[in-house]
Image (cartoon, rainbow, N blue to C red; front, side):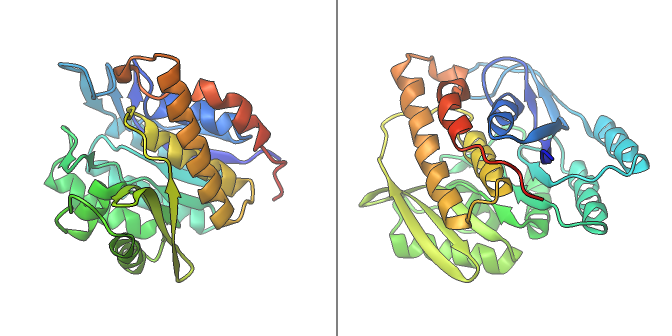
Length: 280
């Protein structure tokens, strides 16, 4: 039986980000996606002078109520950018309801900001709400900026491996979740720091001179798919780093305009190779 994952992310109507990255990535890895849009945007927000934005709180409540009345069970709940802090309470209730009958994998990508600043629609209420939501997760995947926001720390211009692992451990203690901090810039190069089951580890990878919107969505989506495919945590993180880096390289080599976002279609062959039969 194919696993079903509820993906609670925004929907951008132009350029690749959020649900337009999440859905094809998870489906290629053999996971059926039940999309639940948290907001509607005219474009992704990086590289465009203006954009239309509308949160979908009332629609989300209606969908969740309908699913509850149908007694639907899901194998995973995976959240990204949320349109309103009001949505957090509804999501927390949904997680609790699902956990009352089984044990879904809960992955929270706490999308709050990047490059040392919060995203445009993110306010103090959202930061406070996200600090609550991550405590309901099995796995969280903040980037360095988001890790600093969650911990209420200053973001250093450069990390040491030791500091990155310390932050991952502190976030794990705070949330009781496994933690993966992405886009860690150390003197030795780029790395991902993670803390799982009481142990920390650093995975180094090639530092690239370019970046694309939606890369964090791709990372967390690949990770979710691999974990649902019953990969070990260490292997899932290592393979996610490899595939995310490959996607960035292929997107850049193909000449995609940066504001069009990451192109998951360019690694579909690799994603399908990693697809494993689901074992319940």
